[in-house]
Length: 346
Ligand SMILES: Cc1cc2nc3c(=O)[nH]c(=O)nc-3n(C[C@H](O)[C@H](O)[C@H](O)COP(=O)(O)OP(=O)(O)OC[C@H]3O[C@@H](n4cnc5c(N)ncnc54)[C@H](O)[C@@H]3O)c2cc1C
Image (tube, rainbow, N blue to C red; front, top):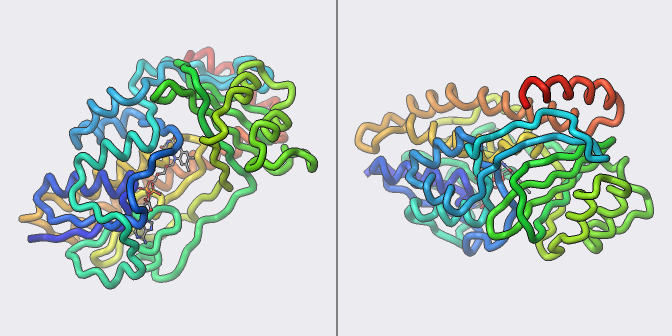
């Protein structure tokens, strides 16, 4: 039987395992964590990602658990509409990472929890897939050298608060933004992205006192931002430095392939990382085809053609969005450009 090792039981690994199992492959998923995560932030599943989930047979469950995103809009720090107010007609679904992973796991066979792969080259499966995230060990095998993600001069503080909302709203100010989105389970998802310049020297530490920190960074901002900060569930707060992968020249080598963040971790500003990961999983499974007729070298070459540049283009667009949203200079022309766009699209 044709065998596949999937290193990493995250979004990409579980989706790919589900597809390959349905195509008759003997799949083993190695996941270093002891179990699926119980906590995590919300992820937006764009229509293309929903299409992949439908093909996997998980779309209905994701729609049932998640929350449709009806409206997306950009405002300035004071709350004035800047950009497009787009009616998304519910085609994008937002749900928390734990709910998404649970749903994907229902379709994925052979998950070995608590199993860290130190040397992907030691696995003797017909195909070995690195779905092992931003610090991928498989990437070293594929690239032929260690390549680390690039830290950018920005950080994110993210979490949830009780409540509900229909809209995905981002508030943009100099060197910082604040976002509010729907999520499942009677919660709102919020996030703050900021450059070091946005933080006063004597601001509270974001890990020790997230509310005090955010109140300082967003002092005087729109009432909805301040109200959200006042109600945050401090247990849920997660703080990280923004990083992205340098562009790789290959995402496959021999019987090894990379999917998801291992291949193209990107800034969070387009909300596309998980979506691109699902597109990778679907394209790789489709390229590999049924186990009985698999031609691994041809399939991996096809997968690389289909996905490498496409995901890198999205990563570049996400980087441009990152720069636009956190601009310090040129805000006035940026905002002027966004307004007519809003009238055209809104
Ligand atoms: C706070 C936050 C919010 C985000 N919001 C969005 C959003 O709204 N929309 C969106 O599309 N994307 C979003 N993203 C990005 C998205 O989460 C990632 O792009 C996506 O999770 C990538 O999936 P993956 O399967 O490639 O990697 P991961 O989800 O990182 O999974 C990798 C898995 O591999 C395991 N692993 C690693 N090394 C090994 C090893 N050696 N052996 C065994 N197991 C290993 C890890 O434990 C992990 O479970 C967000 C990211 C963050 C951090």
